[in-house]
Image (cartoon, rainbow, N blue to C red; front, side):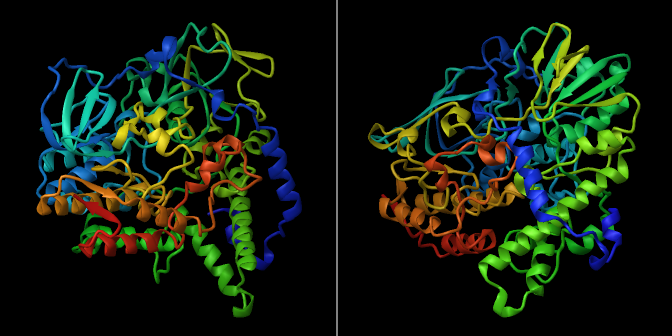
Length: 606
């Protein structure tokens, strides 16, 4: 609870909205860069060693040249839930191709200390009811999430056919045989009747394009390839005892750093937290889940009810209660309350938008006040305050990050929005001052704003030799974000052009998995060799999407980040990166009716 929470609304200091917006714009402007996403480096050439897998040994195997019913690219949540639903539908001949050494996707790679979900476990971790797993905490840590991924793989037999440490290089439609040819970097050339793609946006690490980044003579690694051999400790949070006499810098202060810094602060001799833009850090209030309480709520269908309740509370639906009660639903509760205060004849779009803005201003003032209430050094506290709207960047929730800056070994190196000046053989330079360190940890995230085919590492070649990059040359076009005309028997598992629910990505994936499994089952039962969305149905869906409010991420005064394409104009194609115009809850209800009807309207089965 922040100091402002203790005051009645009438006693809280009035917010000078004009001054606040001017502050937001000033902070944005000092961070704008003309190079946008190009400011980051791809991990290739002399930087390719940053991609080495430190977790699982590479095992040689013979190339696969066989045939499977369904091949899925990506072994994270998307591949696991789709594979599970296919197995439930009787399609057990499923092969998941994954570049990591095991299932997990993001949760295979992200094993940095303190890693945990920031959406409640009961709605974030998929297939809890099916596997019978009881989350240990409201916000589970990474080892538990990875274990759930492995549990799904075992329960549904997905390990049997899986290819790990394998990257797809090409997917080509063979019209003569109505199947896809899958080629990989390990010499595989097998075929599949159907393919699914769930490569996700958070699997290609990036480094900041800092001059001299290859000159550093000390130790360096990316947070998605945490080197416990160097630091000591383990993903479960054991003390990183090898850092006790080390000077360590972590560059980046996004969601990853917020979780890792408390552990580094506890372990390092000296820790420099290098910040370009502060994160907004609200209360997390994590706690163990009481097993008896869990059993009282985990009646049949419980997880679906919780998913729907969260979405209804957080993303434009209606709900009489809030089962999750977290930071994501808090802002929505505030907005609804403010709109409820408006007389019925004044609930115009303009006034409701103003209510949204007022709620956001109040929430961010509380988050900034929280910094003052925790961080003892005034100057450090001022630099840790986030001057932007809450949804300009991924909101963070933590109960130990801000407290870390009260530790004498932990130093905030604020770059005033400019970033690190250069890397030297001995360390890094900010504002002309060189900081000598033994180790640099890059918490610089993953590629998000780059083209789909670049992140995936391949380009689909569909009917008549048309490539996906060509079909989407003017922007993504699909039905439900799943089916793409010209690419029969191919299914995409991701949020865009569907629910587009960003606060809880797994809800999007689980619904897509159900839809794909029912579609494939229907095709097999009919004896159809091909299923494809018609051009007319795809066009109608895209037209429907464009009747909505458009992209909601990143107001004009937002500080640059991956939510708003690093502050750069994303181009005309981005207008299609939207969701169902009636909201996420409405989409989930719609897609359930669409697939359950058995009609599969808009698809052609041949």
